[in-house]
Length: 423
Image (cartoon, rainbow, N blue to C red):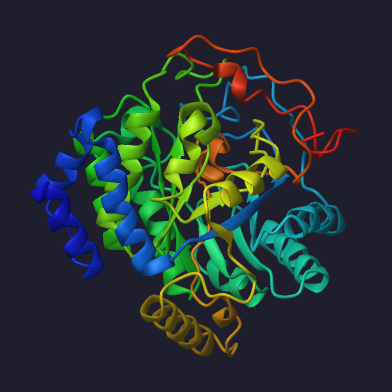
């Protein structure tokens, strides 16, 4: 197919496709799906080989968010029966992070619900970052705390944060239909603040909220323009008790096309399969690894993912390898540019190289995903589950094509309970 040959050539040159080409990927037929995945796979292997980066989320503060994001189980007025608790102590967060690192996670993502942090919150997260890095040498830490005020990104950088996640979620044109309590411009501003402070910028999207193909292309082009190092692609989990509870719009084929489009538009960045992959990709998750080079390990913020060991088995069975802690995630040209920017920002702030150690590997989110409120742009895109054994009780077999909302249950384990994540 001429379209795919063109997109591969552009991806290998890091050249931006046209909007028409990106839309054409989303419009391909099921008969062309494997060709689309194979083409995106060529671009993925050029920049990331067969490595898969593992990310692990620690939910520092859950629920009771004042924002009204329609997709979020923690939103203002949400009736979703989720776990609610205030800030974890640094040692508690460090202990949770250690479980993910033990399972092979290279990055720990610290997420807190809410509109944005106070300076006191930033100081508290700084103590948590220090505790995690003291216990886990070499681990990358990404913060996801919501809208940032002036100077807060610099404080996080000085505390040792490597990256900051804040998702755009959807196009500027439709953002007001999803959230009323803050704007698309607010989100862009926070990503820019993180970038300017020398933090690796992580920003992604949520698919499946009723958006058009044009909306998806718009938000991905915006993410490329923002120069995000990492783009988490979340697939909406329609939580009961939220306005989008009935939005079951995705198929595995649709999810693969979306991932491929993101890879062609952002060929040399970390593309992460984030929240909702178990629900919407289902048995086609291994195929998605040929397009994306990063996943979350274990559970999500307010929903359960597949067991951590199942993730590791899936990666091995598909012929991929877990990216080691000593490997720089991003291609050299991006990693070098990110390290230089981090060093320059740190020097300008009077702290030499405090953020340069990340090597520019952009993280997650969370984000990305549906459900942790404005703090992360989506609960579906974060994991707090420790790698563990496959669950004892497997869900009942579904009829072909049947929607499986039971695949990801509301979290009733982990922080704030006496049940271990993925128990």
